[in-house]
Length: 363
Image (cartoon, rainbow, N blue to C red; front, side):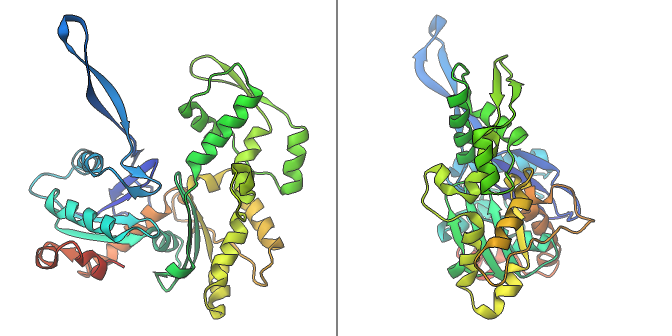
């Protein structure tokens, strides 16, 4: 049985068996609905139940372990066809700077609740580089709940130089909703509609000057929402991309994403600057919006560093939209190595040492 690879994000969970040159066969929402009794009675004194939204993963980290257990139960046994008593091996992707306690609780969950035969975890930045055939470089990962910038040398994340920002796609969705509400006063826009509009319409201006021109004049489009309301969208669609280069739009006093990348790498030994900057990898669905790569490259050409960031293109044999699940693909590549070569955490390792074994064997 091939090992299972799981990349549990704030918005989406990607899962599948370790086949590196294909997209993950399972891409499902991480968010769940839990049905609870609300404490009131309806007709005939029957209990009234309501749906409660549950987020197992918040800003990249597992927060609700009961919900995560339920989600993994569905993924492994229903989605991937595992059978109780015949569980296989599993590799998880780790977000940047995952707390030790979270890693230990995850390995404990997998051995004690799911009875896996082997476990491994690796950081998403390393795996995203593996997906494009690199072991050194720098990843810029714009997720739904966070932005991670991580320099990697010879397969090891340089944590002292890495940067994590607790903003992401969810904050950009809220920004779009706020902007649209100003120009569409009579439209009642909910979060799911705003997310859909962000995916469909968001784009990036060529540069800051071009963005300022869109604020003064730009064509608008009409979009009919699922409930029949009609919304007009014009300059707002450029705001999403611009906020990544001008965080002040989000009310955050910080440098734009390219300058943050350069500053991150500047804290690494100067002899490694070229190797890191010339192997920059963009990750996350947001980075595939129209115009983003061109804007990133243009900002890079203007940055203060003597060596400027340049983007690595995925190999042609890799699946389309690799930026959306590069960590999962890298995990599938790594699973083909660590499990056959017995570099993973075994049940015997876990029984002998306990959850702390994950720090010694998974790095």
